[in-house]
Image (cartoon, rainbow, N blue to C red; front, side):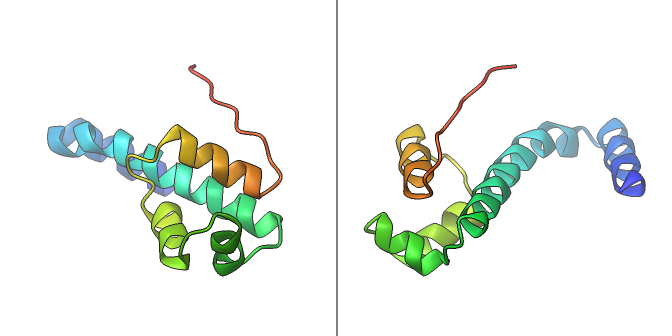
Length: 91
């Protein structure tokens, strides 16, 4: 992990385009991972969660793998379907 962090840090220093786009992309990726972990901890498959949200499995996969421009209302529904509470924080 230290090697990856070092690589990212060095690349940001030497590649302005990478630096501009990395943080936003990473945050979107991280949100998807958090949602996937929460679903798995709830013991649900993507298909089961999709049924609870009245959507398709592909929509759940898209959220977990891309999470770009996801609405807060969608995050709230996702959390509720998992029996969780959504907390938003500005730090």
